Length: 134
Image (cartoon, rainbow, N blue to C red; front, side, top):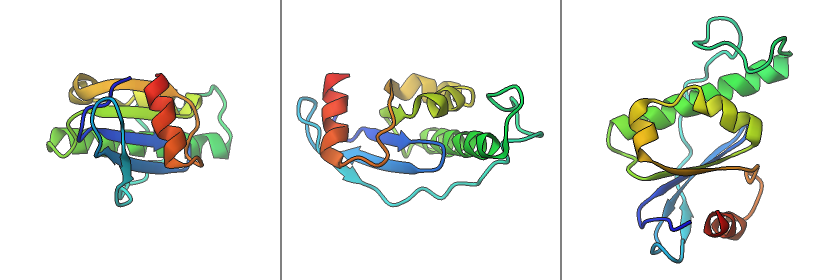
C-alpha cells in the first residue's frame, strides 16, 4: 500500500488508540506519533446507536465496543473538520468490525484502506512494514 505524505494512520484495539502522520513519501512511509486523541467515551451497552457486537456481551466486550465507537466518533469529527484528509486504519479484527459500524460517509470517502491486525503494542517500524505489505 502506498501511503500519501500527510496521511493519517489510526492504530487501535479495544482499549488503545495511537494516531500517526506520514512524513515520508508514498513509497517510504515515515510515521510520526501524534498527540493522544481526546475521546468522549461512549458506553458500549444499552443506549449506543447499534448495540454491542455480541449477542450477550460481558462487561469487557461492552467497554471495548464503547471505546471503538468513541474512536470512530473522534475520527469522524476530525475528518468532518478537515483535520484528517487521507486515512488508513489498522485495528484488531473485532475492533475494526465495531469501528465500521460507526463510520460517517465523509470518513468512508477519505479511507485509503484498512488492516485487520492488532499492532497497538508494536514498534513504528512494524506498522510501516505492515502498511507497505497491505
